Length: 238
Length: 111
Image 1 (tube, helix red, strand yellow):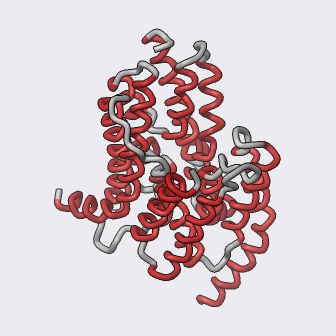
Image 2 (tube, rainbow over the protein chains, first blue to last red):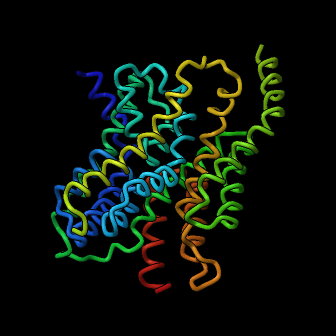
């Protein structure tokens, strides 16, 4: 029990930006859903089992037009395809997480991924519980935020315009952190450059999958150079 | 509600299934792969950096550089975040100040 409390205490500070972002983004989502006639029950159910911010926002279109489940599935796959990268990145980190693993994978949203991939648990803190609490806290913020929004409905309106930028800011800060700690900037540059080029070519609603393919291709091309560097650094370590 | 409750549930179910496929797929596909597989090992080392880059572009995808306000609120705010983060190295300060600057810009300056 003590082990879990230590892990929770270590995890919480990392999730504060997400707490802010999800409370308001979730609330905005709940308000939007209720304005379309979907009560707080539907909103909470959706946030609880899907836990996919951009996917859920997109799904409002499907909830308010002609019933087309296959199209909803395909659009979700396309928008959330980026999660495949998160999984590959965390294969190693989540390798020995045991019975917590299914939940860790279930809750692997953008925000949880960005924290987990850039944060090492402090010394003496159980790694698995640390990742578990980051995931659980983020999940709770999202459900709680959308519940608040669903209950407030469209009665209350306050000017939160621009507040969703808190999540962009979180990702930018993580990007800078990675940039500073990593000597090889190629992967970061490839990620941004390929995505921007694909965004220009394919447009905002179709660029994710082409970006992923271009990024993978570019990384594979650069692997050779990386291997040699790796070999060198290993040799110098010995 | 446009749809019936059963239809609504099916849509929610589809979005959930779609999301879970993308989250579980890598772990299922590479379940048997030994972690010393060099290509997958290489990808899992470099992809976090590329993935955050893609994520930032994804967040900024709706900016239009052709029409007012030409992405200025985003450019200014991200510029401030970068400066602040190099200067103070305080995560919450960088995120908090960046967000407040952005909100002021979109609510009062570039309205």
